[in-house]
Image (cartoon, rainbow, N blue to C red; front, side, top):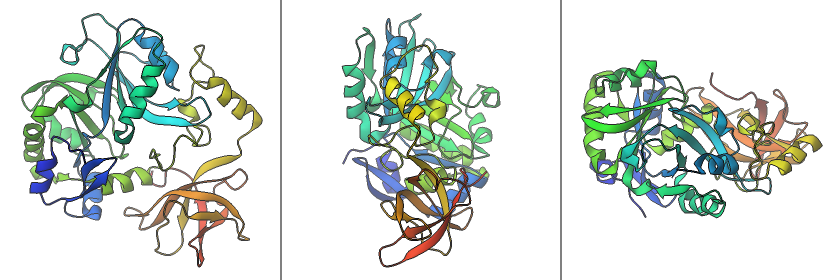
Length: 371
């Protein structure tokens, strides 16, 4: 398995470790539930340095990113980010990602005055995404893979800004959601301070040189000790994102799922002037009408749904499949995501989750589960 610059730290903290996307990653430290509520109520810090980071710069950079991503890059100002996906041309999704419009960033090998973007992709798709984007680089853009040189920490929760503000001169409260600044943090220069995250509890994602990861981790933990900051693992990250109805690549979206089916029409620029890979296919799909939709659902009882379980209608006919499920710590009942045939996707629809020997009653509900 691959490691991150903080793997030794996780071992010293006696984290429960497991293979995730080919990386040895912390699943939990003190317990999933405790870490979950730390993020919802105070703050938690995640090592997400396994994620991939690509620089796309120079002449043709805008054209390449606009061509391979579903969202409209022309709307991005410098120091702004957007959620997007890489359509595969056959109606599916290569990956979902964040696209950052960079200002001059000499620490990332970007000459002054060049138009440049930072693409942040899922750990399990780094090579796949690099090869895909490279294969469509007919625009002369320069691509640089900085994944191995970059550490990424996500400090999330209502006290995250207060904690991090003690370590930087940048006014964090002045950074709008899905915007970022480059500044110093914990004595380290050229840190990207990004008001983003995948927990729904606010906070920042911090990009910086990998060889400084342990120093930055320790200083943030020290700054947060009086605010209830806890290290948090991927177990809590999953329950937090699921409560907000955020998709997980490999579960809720993949090469076989359409961004329109997945409720990601808001990041799919069908009306933009510029074409992107698979645009005509998605326009045709929308005009023909969707055949299935990703929905949220809640269950009676205590048993959590799991990926691959069948979704049945009230009469026992299979109408879909579960893609994600968990017991929600915040709501204290089981929740899940799954694809169902159109007609069964409306909130309030009675469904069943097929466990094999029996089926559990459930109900389609609005996403997010937690406001």
